[in-house]
Each structure stands twice: as C-alpha cells, then as structure tokens.
Length: 150
Image 1 (cartoon, rainbow, N blue to C red):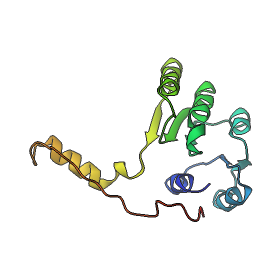
Image 2 (cartoon, rainbow, N blue to C red; image 1 turned 90 degrees about the horizontal axis):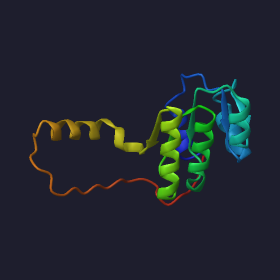
Image 3 (cartoon, rainbow, N blue to C red; image 1 turned 180 degrees about the horizontal axis):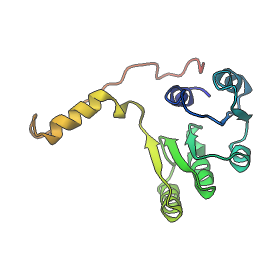
Image 4 (cartoon, rainbow, N blue to C red; image 1 turned 120 degrees about the vertical axis):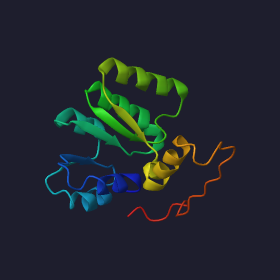
C-alpha cells in the first residue's frame, strides 16, 4: 500500500473499503490501520475470489497490471488501473475486449492530469481563448528517484 496505492486510498477514505491487498505485510498493516474493517490479503487473486466487491483499484507493479485488471473484469468488477494499463498492445486489446464483452467500466489513472489546473486549460482551449496550441512543455517536480515507500 505504497506509492500510488497510498494516494488512491487517500481519495476514498470515506468509502466502504472492504479489502486491501499488498504483498508487503508492513505496508499492508500500516494502511489497514486506517481501514480497520477491511480484510487483508497478500494475493489479489484470493481477494477477488473471496470478497463481494463492486470495483477494483489496481496499483500494483506495472508488469502485473494486465493480469490484475483482467482478473477483476472476469469476476464482473469495474476496474481503475494505474498507468500503464498494460505492457503490450496485445494485452491492451485483450483487456479492452474483455471490458466491452462484460459491459464493465474501466479507467486508467494519470495522477495529476485530472487536477483543477488541467481542467482550466481544457476550458480555455475549448473556448478558443488562447488560439492554436503548437507546442507544450510540462515539468512535474517531486521525488522521481524512488526513496521511501511509506
């Protein structure tokens, strides 16, 4: 429950979180203290198979996104997955087709790109307030080199 998972949980503190999953028991215990009624799992497949869930948030290492997302979709769950959705185009097509076939909602996270500053820029563009955009440069600060997961 570190990095993006922690940020995602911060956004749903008031919701009914029924289960949490992390392979690292230290991080799982830390976040579970915020959601004391949530069941704890180290394996997402067991969690999905045992819990009555409405949706799944996938904040796992990148190489597991397609498998975790597809597992959730197979079990009839709507899925929010952090970027990248998959590692390959074929994985992405398979996940997309599965979501269509099951008539489920999916969303891929892009962290800061849904913030108020980006929404205001979209409003300005749609209103043609700034003319034709020819080039954009964006810098995002922060600790991009890793460090503590806690």
